[in-house]
Amino acid sequence: MDLFELAAFLKSRRARVRPRDVGLTAGPRRRVPGLRREEVAQLAGLSADYYTELERGRGAQPSDQTLAALARALRLGRDERDHLFHLADRRVPPAAHGSAAHVEPGLLSLLDRLTTTPAMVITALHETLAQNPPAKALFSAHAANGVSATGGPTTGFLYRWFTEPASRAIYPLEDHPHHSAVFAADLRAVAARRGHDTEITRLVARLRRASDEFAALWDTGDVAVRRADHKRIVHPALGVIEVDCHSLLSEDGHQRLLWFTAPPGTEGAARLELLCVIGGQDMSTANEGRPA
Image (spheres, rainbow, N blue to C red):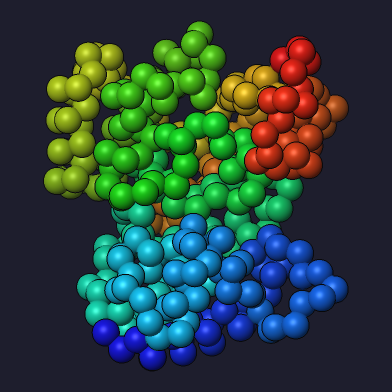
């Protein structure tokens, strides 16, 4: 691994990213072009000390997941992402799946521009790859819907939905049958698009063994691509927020941009607006005694 080449590349990419490109406020006292080191670290989910060591040509060799997170934070194109992996002596991972996946540039560009609307990029198997700040605030209490930490379909929200009961706290209990049916039908559509994909085959087999509910839904043969849906999301401070979930698929169908809106003038719209103001801060004390 050429630590100094890696450090130089990271510095050059950091210098070209404008704060507004990644949803940050430039502020009047900024003295460096592009992003600060601590801002890159925050966007990539790394410690500022570790990222600083990388830019100084020191530190431990970064993992595939760390490199992928840096590629997203620095808004690297596919060729730049591949170059980053080569500099770190890492094999370039598959582009479609897991936490080391490269987010489609078009979807990431749209995500960057959705600053007041919760939005995220996920894989077709519901592994979360990137979220904007409003989405992080909306889903902050639901770890299962966060960015996948280790990669692979079994870390995604679809697998957890059928295997980890705690993941379902994101939706009211009475809505669970609807979401289960949507997940199963959408997975069958993904399986059809990919043909004889061993990853899908293994995932379906594991789900059938782990969940009688999934097995029963799979055996119905229902198939439907999830393009839009109405959801009620449980937020710990704001209560139930009713939203419309929209979906935009990448050209190859491997990734999706999801964004969440509510009709103007509705309670859902008011709560989404408040969510963007309070962000991910803990509102439990401030809202104590406030009706949901």
